[in-house]
Length: 449
Ligand code: SAH
Ligand code: SF4
Ligand code: F3S
Image (cartoon, rainbow, N blue to C red; front, side, top):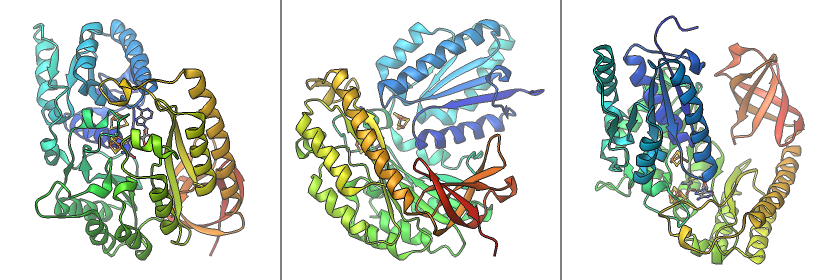
């Protein structure tokens, strides 16, 4: 129950959005609002939207429908839309027209103005002054703003902290909306990142995850020539017990130096998320991914020389013109590489992208292919998990499991493990013996020393 004014933020999409929501929560806390998990208790509701696939947009639209009912009951609630979906000009304007009950649309680059905008809107409401819909350049995508609010005042994922190192994307993979809604690459100065990481570790965070659509191109936009490998080394040299993770790596930019650095430094997590997308060279070229399957396979061979390393990936089926042959190339790749885990998606046409203008495949074929792919990958993930049984791993405990006296955490290479344990263990490193598996996740027992 909120006796004071509360805010509710719902985040759709990727970790970038989770990080942006933490910044938003910081802004709202500074205004004196408290967080709530119960939307019906909130006086400010924020939807941080995503538009990567049609399914993501539909989820947002569904929630907007529910918020309308809430607003009908209580006109005082302030409803705010932010995030990638409204960075598309047409979409933002359409939403504004269709859902007149939404109070504020605000673009990512203008988030630093949010505080002032909320204050003004509330003042207008108080004075019963009719305020205009607030529409602050939702679709503008200049990333120069990012250093203004790099540090969220409010974090939600202890013992992990997200640290954005590069915003935007320059790659224009032909299926992808991200470069259109997040703008061009903009790296954050290494000194700012270093200071933030040190301060987080001093506060007790035990895991830092560096974020970027393509962390490997970190620094390419700077005149001073910083690069990702140097940043990793600088952070890995901080003499405190913690895990350093990063995502996402684009295969075209993952250098041998970065692989050596991951191998060399104990506190860099032995996990590389390396999206393959397709095993067919014809499709990879149409996707504008700028590597061949052979390049990718060679990279995985180099990575696999790191002891206990886990490679995970993203794969898409049903890209325009994908034939059964192309799809079989993807299945073969999955069989050959044996990813620890994979996020698997059905291609979804995004307006404005190159691929949306290519001949599209029927849904039936896409569905059939995703079922086959998921079936194969699940089998592989489960087989890999079996190999963990009987061994002991250092696990960082992240959370409790609701409705049980269990906790969960991850091995250094990112495998999820659950075990009996209490809340006090969150943020601690413990040695866990793996007893059995459930699906692809591991079940263990804390070793007493
Ligand atoms: N920057 C990351 C990916 C970000 S989006 C990279 O380049 O690897 C996360 C994943 O969503 C992508 O790897 C891709 O597999 C998937 N994706 C992106 N656009 C998509 C689309 N139009 N339809 C289906 N999946 C998509
Ligand atoms: Fe999208 Fe490609 Fe950029 Fe990843 S690298 S965000 S898939 S355009
Ligand atoms: Fe979605 Fe934007 Fe992330 S489109 S996946 S929230 S960068």
